[in-house]
Amino acid sequence: MAANQRIAASVVAAVACASALAGCASGSDVPRREGAHGAPKAAQAPGSAVRLIGDGSTSYTGAQPHLPKPQRLKAGEKPPQFVVFSWDGAGEDSQKLFSHFRKVAKDNHANMTFFLSGVYMLPEEKRDLYRPPQHAQGSSEIGFNDAQGIADTAEQARLAWLEGDEIGTHFNGHFCGPDGGAGQWSVDEWKSEIGQAKQFVKTWKSNSGLKNVPALPFDYDKELIGARTPCLEGQKNFMKAASQLGFRYDSSGVNNQLWPKKKDGLWDLSMQLVPFPGHTFEQLTMDYNFMVNQSGTQTQGDPDKFDYWGNQMRDGLLQGFNRAYDGNRAPLVIGNHFESWNGGTYMRAVEDVVKEVCNKPDVRCVSFHQLADWLDAQDPQTLARLRGLEVGEAPKQGWASFLSARPAPAPKGVPGAPKP
Image 1 (cartoon, one colour):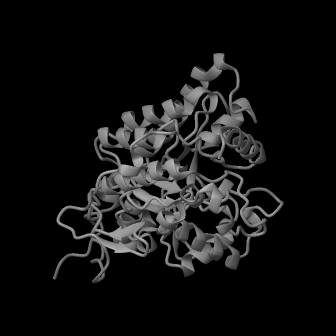
Image 2 (spheres, rainbow, N blue to C red):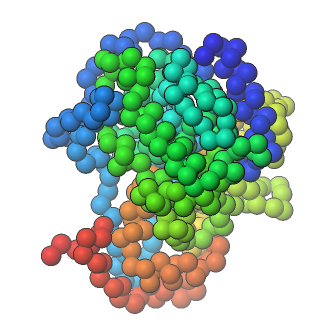
Image 3 (spheres, rainbow, N blue to C red):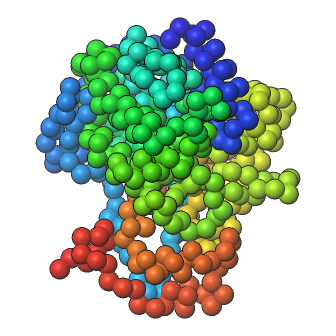
């Protein structure tokens, strides 16, 4: 897109979802950088052989590196404190926030989940390939991309996966609201949207002409196991569609800080409500929601308040973390966008939280994939006991006593089961 078109798309997207529960990602401001078309050969999983898939946009390179094997809690063992940092509409643009937070994760012993928007892998001139539910062919609230933006985003997604991060999906056109938004889509329409999100990732080379850019090092049909819907709309029908398509989790709802459970066969790993410093109500763990409750629909409010607003988000997330860490140890799920709203104050807040919490004892900053693996490996009776703890409630008798009953052995074939 031309620069003025991108800015217009960004403004439209911000205004369109300002009254929604959760945030929108604006269109990519794609940089022009030399050298991408002559990128070097892709890194790959150690000891693996590359097998290209389809047109070579994706490939099989073996098991994902740095994906830990989940272990069942032992009798009386205190659960680790899981924290998930996740990014809606992940893509690399001139802000280079994707690459920046990859480095933040690596420097702080963390993995993250990047929810890639499919249209960020589709060039503007091929926009008619997208047929959004209940909207005109080729339309999108967040625009499309160009060759350079696609190459940069593919590079970051490839490196992130090789570092142990997860590539999920934020679907495509980011339609919200009552006029054909995701909340009005049927199960079949969700299946179409999911299929198209996969297809754009699986065919970005053919659609962009970037034949010499390295393939993504994973099979997206197998890698894609979870998502977050636009503006948190349409969760009910999405989960029905996703469960039929083999997904394992969803992060499109609003939860309290409690241990997760399954809905429609999927782990409900939604974001949560945490303290909102200076207010009597709690706030969703997402940058967009803090912004709306601070500067309203203005994505760039009063500069004199930027530091205060960022500190407010940071402190709210840390209070939520401490409440879980010292209490029921429920996983903390945090959602963000690669945006510079209010001077980038929320990016600073999130980075501060990563540095503060991910290096603490017993803390695991993980992707949703890793969290779902760990949950699947646990004794269902243990998880049921954990779900009985209220927000911030630590076991009165201590963890050793609370989880002292000997857990049932893991069924054969379940992640974490002992070897025969």
